Length: 62
Image (tube, rainbow, N blue to C red; front, side, top):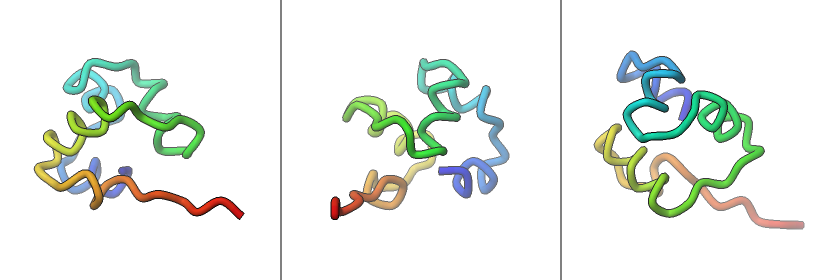
């Protein structure tokens, strides 16, 4: 997600504002310590004009 923010010249705070969450939520998403709701993932994908799959990927558990 950090790469998409850079591409669109958005700070964590600005992205958070656009999708209606706190900046800390964006920080946690980028660190991988928070899994977004489907609605949040859809909102983020909409901001970046990308499919959800381009931004979020599923990690296989070992």
